[in-house]
Length: 415
Image 1: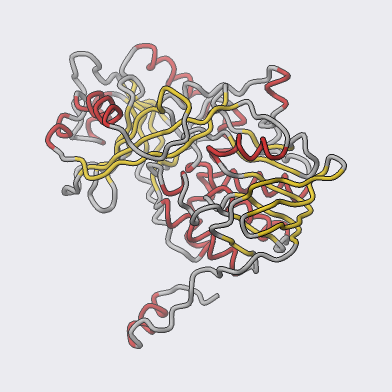
Image 2: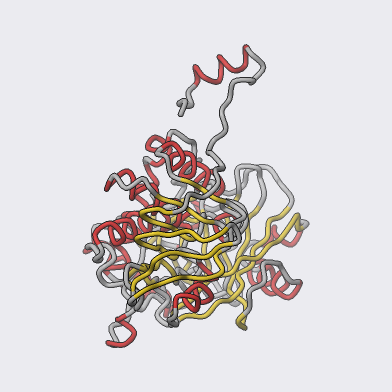
């Protein structure tokens, strides 16, 4: 793989950009692999990448029923943060955030990581107490956050109205090294690196069955034929329940749609990410000037990937009081993604009832921020056959044991 650099750009400019290679190969599937990863989204590609980088396992196929990064990875609002309450959650998300810091250099691909800061607004006394508690927990966990005053909030985000009659801003939980990254670039960077290791990324290849013998996985049936494997990783976000059914077990989660929208582009006016749990919305400005707006999940189970007028009305109405300028903007586009939500709002990373079959699922709407950490933990799980330190608490057995990792507050904006 030819490295990207300023020199390479100059060289290709002189020959009219005729020498660029394809970022990744598009091979036909082989008859068998050591590991098959189902799902070529961020977590699936990151899992494959760290299998190769950390464990030297490169006889890997990543199967995708659509196009690479076309699921939730390309449909989210790109927020990255790690200020979660529970110790196990904070460790996993902080690992991901720290990997994001150097991911462009590691992958030789600009993921446009922007540590612009993330503020979670406290607009009730209950939220003030909750975020102060989280700040104390983060201090013990080694995650740098702080609870800031309303005046500091206004300094960081001048376009905000902090004196709203219904929901005044009483403070905020700030993580200065949180921020955003370019979601497509994250998927493309991982894909390019995986392909360079010799892994096969096979698009338009839907898994229609999982084969096993003696309680151990032996392969998958796909729309491109049967493929054998020694180990299988299911990393398909909102479609996790359907794949688990093919493998013969059920998951303690539900699939729902999460919608978002962007406004027409405007001049730079906001260089921080703001999340507002009370009014149920969150806001940032993209590099193209669009105001990126999101809210909560749909109130019913579904597998749709489209927006609805109800969501636009509900989310924008909630944010207009805190950001009055939004009322003057036109919507440019909206979209939806399918998210898989567990009862405790924490992911599942662990073994399954089918031998040598492993799963990474249940991220709800917080999957993008966790891509590097989730991939790192899942790769360790698949390579060793047992969970490592990052994933030890996130197995499915916790729902039988009543050992929940309750992050319903930290994920309060469906995030």
